[in-house]
Length: 386
Image (cartoon, rainbow, N blue to C red; front, side, top):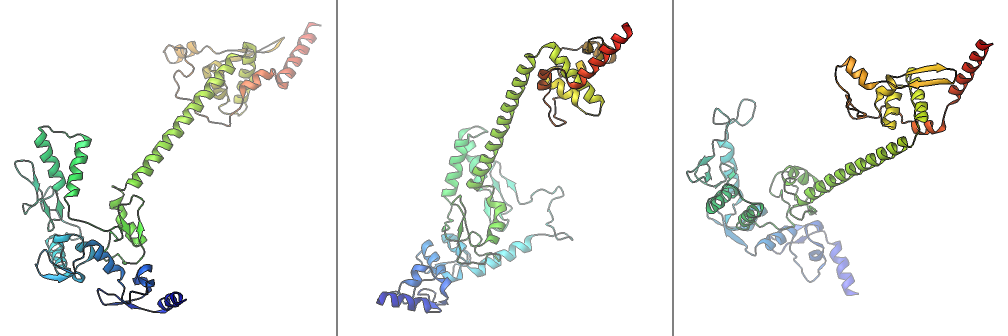
């Protein structure tokens, strides 16, 4: 019962004092465990807890001014740099020094020092090592870091060849990152210390498990950089690419199956049945049904000029379709020889109209229109014979 009362009393308290920085913080300034633990009269705030996770030191010398300062004089991302950490004052001085060294044009853009617009800070030593204008591989003033490129150069020189394998490149990069003094806790926002970072208690971990953000604004600002190395994003993009390729392959397989089925169906038709489909397409095309000849020819597996270049002859037995001489048409009009293929002189077939089953029409036989024409012709021949 006493424990419950203590918990209720702890929840009703408005603020508590941090045991390390001795500042009063509201409820959201502490973790749930620190706030609820009644045995700790002065719990540790979130910020001090993060500092402690990086290092138990309460103070350390600044990298530039060498003054031994308490950790509150360092930004948390600077504190994570270890012996290379800079205090707030030195960080501001360095920022002003860098900004003053940048030459701007009238429109506010950075002006290149050289006429050709190249990077004036880059220098290459005779051994191929890249350095800045201050002869450093990593320079905060020039804002450059050539250490990784130089490690690749040293590895190529050591092996005596111009190219490295992927395994060798990965090993060099891993060794380069291992030697870095930067150690950031998973619970620290990657944008901590910048003006845009609200330093909220909310922490959002990227699915790649590499960086943490405290707000959506921090994530949006950092995404342009992080998306180049985010393993989760790369995995998703690869999955999307594979899905698109698989969908395209499935579509091609379905098209091949459809073409094979149509070709088999067309081969099972008699010439008389094919003539029925040809005449129907011929009349449909001439009565406003655009692309009917192309569609019918594609399903029958023949050149469109077989139908389009053909004619219909009327006789006592009704309508008779005369196929077009494709070879003659190409020879006389274009002076080229037809190779016998169904798409000779044409591009790949594209569906231009609502698909119509011309194979089914051929199997059904003569339409009512054709039967009526045949009856009229028979009656006419009978009247003439009397």
